[in-house]
Image 1 (cartoon, rainbow, N blue to C red):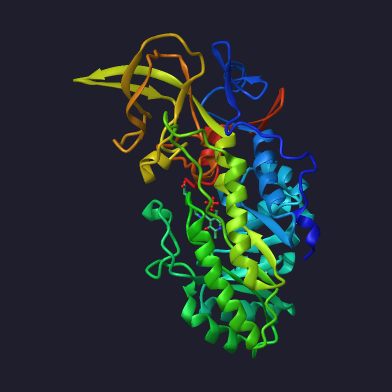
Image 2 (spheres, rainbow, N blue to C red; image 1 turned 180 degrees about the vertical axis):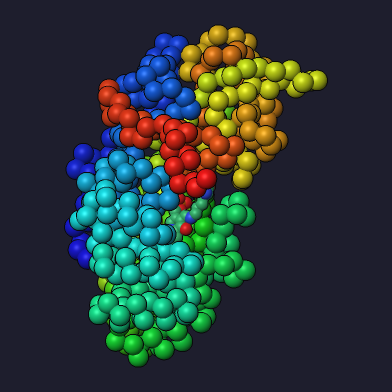
Length: 439
Ligand code: LLP
């Protein structure tokens, strides 16, 4: 562990708009690249990401924690594209992983980043633990006493000491969607904070376990900073007790979860990412005062990637059913499941604007379920077959949650860097899709 991982970007905080998508005349651009041209070159559905926005967002965290020993561990699950992981690794990122698969992604993106990996997740398997031990990761965030037993067994088998942090459940309520809230006593994650001391005490007997830290993660898409501070304050209390018991706690992992504004409000000011991260860091710093010397980890995912990306789709047709108008797109819930799964709101922009008056429509995909929608009763410019649309804020938990439902190939992905665009994942083919099947 070294203190240098939390270095700033060196560029100073040049403010960047919350999203990289903007109109030049009538055409929507991602930074310096026309989306109409990208659709032409790569087809749709197409995920488009701004490298500049991702670097900027990640850099905000690095700058906000630059004054202390800290590592920003990007949550791989938010967007696990190898090209994006490599870009972040080059900035000195650590990574929060939740599977052996994500470990492999980090390895492919950057071998040197492996030592900055934390391994979270409620059900780690033996092969995953082994792979992570061999890779020499920074720390395991352990979610139960049983898992700790397994970790000790595997560490002994491999002849290495395993650094771990128990993930404690601070019983803090944070306002978010119930599916992505994790910090309450009733959730499957972590162990009750009141039981933690006993568990650390019992592990002290194993020479294969190194109780290096304590970790916490209270949920995702949390827009207020107070719950993070409340959770960390509880962790600080526990760290004090653990130190009294003789454990050398050096790392505290405050988890991820900082939320963004998906909904553009006509009355509220535009989302200010830099300010949000500063508030978040200040709240954590205050709660961390009691911690003394620790290496602080944070695990942002959504905040780094969501607004940097959009999902571009082409209108297949417009259909009238009774009083309703349906805009049917070539993207579907298999490409972006957030509206179907969390009733999430994503803004939708026409790639060529100014073509018609506004109307109220449902934007839906072609999949055989009514849950396959992107928007209900959305007022937007009239569109027709062949037009292109962009679903905003799809850079996190978009492609990473995509599936092949309805035997649909997964979308291609493009990374825009200023005026240049690079294909970072080709569109799947039907052959890819069926390659693993046995007839
Ligand atoms: N650390 C841990 C242990 C996590 O479980 C998560 C997210 C993160 C960090 C990153 O949280 P973030 O900063 O991205 O909020 N699919 C849902 C979100 C699920 C989040 C799961 N855990 C969505 O589309 O909203």
